[in-house]
Image 1 (tube, rainbow over the protein chains, first blue to last red):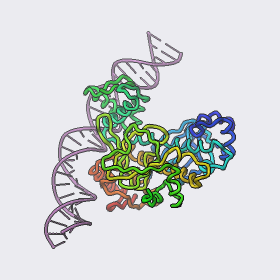
Image 2: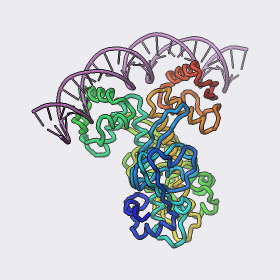
Image 3: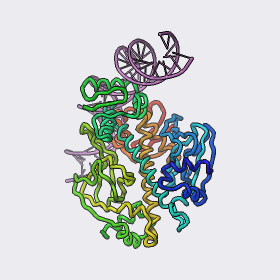
Length: 217
Length: 217
DNA sequence: TCGCTTTCGTTGTAAATACAACAGACTTTC
DNA sequence: GAAAGTCTGTTGTATTTACAACGAAAGCGA
């Protein structure tokens, strides 16, 4: 377990908590380590989540299968990230969580995390706040993505995304962290159709671009 | 302020907290009451949110305006509900929050809510957990909606939504809480096109329906 | 430099969608 | 019971998109 303290130290769950305190809290929070092979399920649809879960090795996918067997990926989870936090409230988890590679997860007892223990762990309150902030971050990502995707046309989705980037950077010129295919996947549209639409917008004088650099005009 | 205790009592923030404790906490959490006329802004894009906010009268809309002035509604807020919780982490709020009618909001100091005060408020920990759970609920709503909307075709969106309802109710027959227009707005598609697609699916034998009652086959 | 791969723009076609307009069934209201 | 309004299905058309396929440009390794 202690081999992963370096990773836990960098995770959002233990932000502003020292290494010694983390080691001390491992027992207090009933930390348990579990290994998964590629393709194994960490959670299945309908499971109850009773642990705060941190990925410390590998990669996970959060995905959903519908009534007809179609699969869609909700999000991916990287090392150091929390997942399934939103299901600690008691709702059954709606998605499958699958190991995309050999992975290790550390589970903390949710009840112990969410209940402050008298005086033994002075940094416990910080951890609770961190958990809340981590969930906030997830939430913001979702709202942002929803705002883009809910637009009807490809052009509107692009406008939504690009104008947000402009606001975020405070400038009409900015670089996006996606290539064309990734941007298309992010906005849930076809790459070639999106590429064509971008060029049409450029020709109409709405914007200019070079690779991943854009300028709104 | 005390006239709203009945409403606060029913809000998620004070679940499992008695009326007397709520009254006691109003001062501890630095509760402040503020009134808004229709059209007034509770928060504007870019504001910092430093209060836990509960709507106790009226109705609010969370909406976003993009670079070109287009408006899109993210969600609505009803009496007793928390809003803008995800921005307590320090990020500037991405949306405008506007009063859709004459409204009253009670603000609690976020720092005081998130930090347990020694012993004065025995139910303080419960409130912190409640805040976390409220955010979880928001999160689930978002993930669910995203799962539907990110599908490419109207049929896939319908499949996604209806198969989820089937899973949720544990039956192939269920009633949805929307009429056709509301369902279309929820899934971000055109009503008439959706209606046509539903009938096509019925004719193909995928499902049957009568008003808001559906049966998957 | 030569192949190989990746990325991006471009085009054509088939499919899906938005939009507008309308008719029938059903509700509500007076 | 009549009138007005709402909800739903239906249809036609213009627009938009997905999909497939291809070529040019850039990056990369041998």
